[in-house]
Length: 135
Length: 352
Ligand SMILES: [Zn+2]
Image (cartoon, rainbow over all chains, first blue to last red; front, side, top):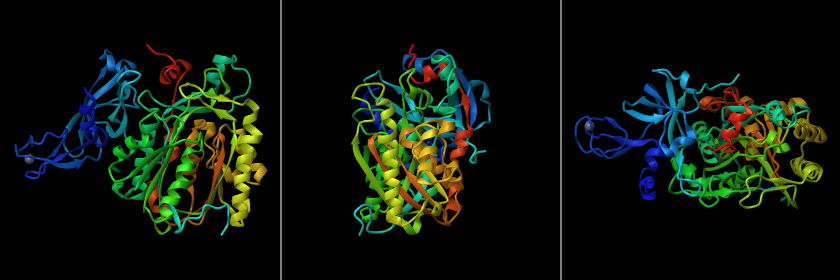
């Protein structure tokens, strides 16, 4: 993807910004300007809270070139608290610890780098929800 | 008015704070196994290592989100997001714009990266005190974060770690800790450096101790206590820059602080030296425990060289705010031990 394409996606990737449908109230991610529930135009920005649970998952051992450095990693369908199901990498978790229904929270991490001299791309991933109080 | 204190026009304090420490730990004995056959003592027990998808920007973002959660303000009220680090992901392109965008503080915000070895974060805090204290802004965020690297086999490899802390400075009446006084003490002292384009730093061996770390911290600390009219026993807690376990213990003793005063904020044994995060991640661990009325003494150190010293008093707002984000000890408890092979992969010393 060209620099402009990454730049246009920055709110979506960095802050989990989607949309809310002014007609039926559906929460939409990724933003697509037409509500998938009622077909009406939807363009009111909405920043998702970043909490959800693992709906299904798969661990990737053979990866596209950009992601070789990170393999193996787990990709999940995450059902957000507000409703939408989105595809995202899991992080800070061993593949054999992942379970369907596991509560997860959004973090911002490196997605990939365009070689040694290109852009570093940051975006959302999900990790198991942290305990709040340490021992 | 004193000539040494940095005195804002209006009183300011910490509105919210947050820390982040990656989950991977390499024990110092595992590094010693590689280079000395496991012989000899080690300067820390273990250190925090960033995951493959972590860097100074991602560490700063999570610490910043924790600070916002505790402050209870929306990011669009921040007029500055400043990131101090010696390991910014880009040589040219600010870390702070990435952080500001990720937390929702853009576009009407100051953004800038600060550099001063391990005190870049407290340098940004001093500037934030001025920014808010002058009335230019109501809220400013100062962050110190690093993913420090040591040359394989060098003494620094045992301690160079990853982590960070973020602070929102705002008006004293909204603060969970009021900043009662601060000053900076700086000289041109070449104890540690890294030239542009070099992967690993160089250091002046034993020169790093007396004329650098100890001189700057004790000078800043004594000047601040003179200006404030205080003695070590007036503080419930103290925290100093932590390049290893011995230095902060020794500097505390030199100044007259007890082991009990520094215990809560002394994290280096468990997470290593988080560089720009070192003293201030320790401060977050203290704020996690402190009670209203407690007085906290903070002195950072950055090679090159200088120290920032702060006198804080905790307010009753700490009680309702501290559990709105994970405590620093929760990050430390989230520990996954790795061996030298995995460490080499995570730190880019082993590339396919
Ligand atoms: Zn709709």
